[in-house]
Image (cartoon, rainbow, N blue to C red; front, side):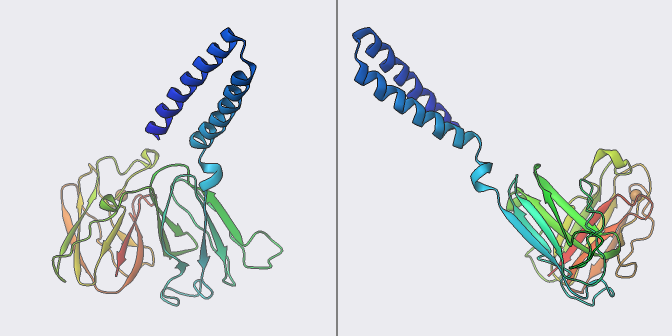
Length: 259
Ligand SMILES: [Cu+2]
């Protein structure tokens, strides 16, 4: 990008020089060629500066049929439940179920996504991701349903994935000031913890007030209250993606993905 930009500047300077020489020599042919090249370079530069117009992609997430009946009824309620996209891309959720769903994150809220053919409203919701980061979303109507979207997050920063064995330990931090809704997170670090079955996950409270990590389904796991500077460890066996909240500060959303 930077290279292309400086390359264009050099070309523009050369053309300006050409135009100047042709003006001095009254050489009209050289002048018109220079003008044509200048137009071409302007077009190419515009494409470099506004790449979204050609590279913006739309990703569809299907809200599976039957997912709203109960937790675990469908193995992947949001399909796919993990997306790796680029800044400027669009994600479109499509309700294939017979009941209402929502997708809610800190930075967006779908409202009701209606079933297909409903007279009340649209069965799809789209959101354009114009910021980098990790976005965890849940269905507020069925809080056991969740997913993660990584927008230009390098692989090395996505997860704490340990490959040292089946019984590994992974730490999740509840950072300082997590209790404040308007700090926009992250409320749990990492926001999505990806582990293998059998992993022990430890939540450590580095904030000044108490927090919990409580699964959205209400029964998969619950650290109960963790006081400041204390930790609670839980072992994850069942596979799936588990959105969780702090019961005291429900805007604190995280997720554990067990594979
Ligand atoms: Cu809390």
